[in-house]
Length: 334
Image 1: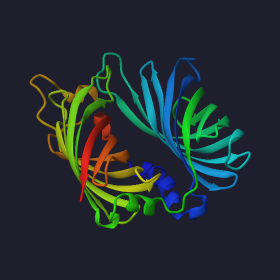
Image 2 (image 1 turned 90 degrees about the horizontal axis):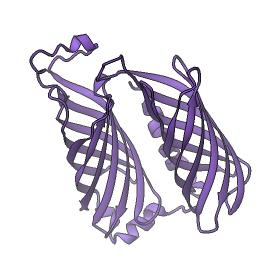
Image 3 (image 1 turned 180 degrees about the vertical axis):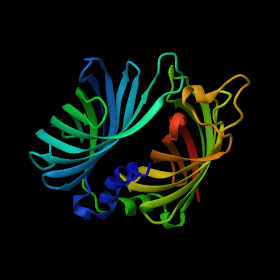
């Protein structure tokens, strides 16, 4: 379970370590269709992506790739790639090629099953793209993706995307501090959230979810958060938990920031309902407190020096309890 951690933090770590003059960053999203090898099934594929310039012709990316709902397969996960670009930043046409690793969470079902058998596997991800950069910072692209999986099906996808290029700035954190007045004093943040949880099950119900967290900045690029979570779900599923997460954060402007995290969720599985035997479905429920791996991404936007709007997407990985938690909220910095 520890293997996705390097993927999750590598890119933002590069954003911290790369010299200031090379800190151009991009946010983008794409969607399209993919076809699985073997059976020939196809599905909608999409991803959100953060890219960091490393040099004139090289960049790195971190993305969350979703390969859609193939029959009896739901596969997604984090991916990191190193990119070659045909030319430096600027408006106009650009060609790109990327290669990297993809940590795939694949849920498969037995006929009549509800919770899946979730396999966590490695795959290679290769991409080729044609981009067009506009003068106002926006860009659009067409991209071909090839996922070559180990011990699982492979896929080929064709997608279209759009994104925004943030110009080189060496002092983004300083700009944020200036916009906040005495920004160095605003080290703490309290947030309230509301959203939904989508478990990796079949079908996929949406359960109401809410949370409350306290975030503290350890450095300009590192933060720690403590979150209480409440979710709905099946009678034998977890409903309440507390998560401790370590965040790597990057400032993209005076108001906008992005971050990625890794941590642990401590929760409890309640007693199973009468007449239900989880062993028949290959589940092990011991009704005890369980630590789950939780990884997350967040986007924060400072509405005022002290008030911030925040979106959080957490992935909880713990056998049959694999799920996504999407939260939208507001916070106060002090």
